[in-house]
Length: 359
Image (tube, rainbow, N blue to C red):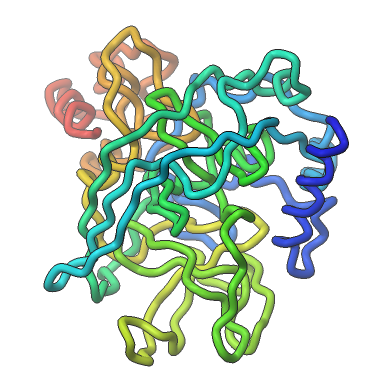
């Protein structure tokens, strides 16, 4: 890594450290749950057969189950973009419109072949403008029960999309995948996205030391930086299973006790599940255009393309079984649906219907 890139990593890491040992952050690999769990992620979908970073970088200590964020390489470059995004209140909705081009510079993508980042993650994708519009509840409400975390979770106030903590195969994307100095990179349909809070978003504080709003998740609840009440530096263990909590915050010009999420330097970084209702159409809007069969699949945890693997989380929920049970029954791709249905003790048409209905 050249001196400029190394300097940028150290500056970004120190800005987001907040008392954590950034040289030994716990890896999130394997912290996949099938229900809400503090410090884990209940993901709607992962695909163990999908691609991702080609090899572990030297910043990962697999034996210790940690990684050194201060030593991780970054994708070089300082590319400027014509960012366009807006937030508008329309009756009882908050409408986010964006071309997904961030209001900060990005690295050069595809990853340059002569860069150190290329040795570990040869992301071949290009950043491209999107047409995104989602309408979220202005006053979100807690659902009766939490929901699994989709690949595309929400957006930051940089104008760009936020994905969950995982890469497509279900590993800790922040640790394994190489991103630029703002912690972003594109997936195959060109959607520039983060898997954690971007250090290129200014770390502002409200009176009392609480972090300022940094974005919104798809259930409408706000995402705040890593400081809680009285300026307390937060970690996942300080928050609930979905990575949030309830206390009084400023919301729409009022002081109200309401639920909100926090970003932290440790896994799952932003959300382990979602506490309010969200629309799958909004997930798809943030994920970019669906690719046709033969074009490959998005990387970085986005929903899979048309003709790709189904969302096993939603299919399992429709069948009333665990994701693991469904995964084991299907076996290695391509699955034998007749055999899988026999293992599950259900009709083939019921299994096919559940898989077809899962986006």
